[in-house]
Image (cartoon, rainbow, N blue to C red):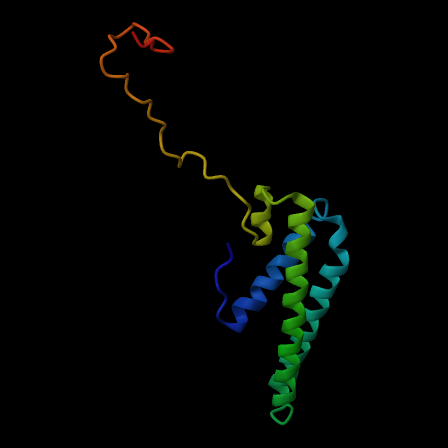
Length: 136
């Protein structure tokens, strides 16, 4: 369901949006508070590393590595939240879309029509053929 995120800004925006949606729907997923706090901590440490990266050019490489580590932790926390949403709501619940999870949907309406076989040749319409033909 979620598109491939290509830029750093898109990834961070996606994680922040997930955190906001979990906050809005806390009644649906009450047992993901640990994962949400891990996601929020990862986003906060990412913000610290980004400011450090902008302030000091000498610390740029270290800050970039710290940002990558924080982003990895955030992605793992988001993965756990999405799995908890699937477990808590069920795999077919349409509310999974709020958490960027594709719900399982049936393929109803896509099946081919069942065609009745034609009548046996030689049998007039409305008349039944004998169940067991007898040999004379």
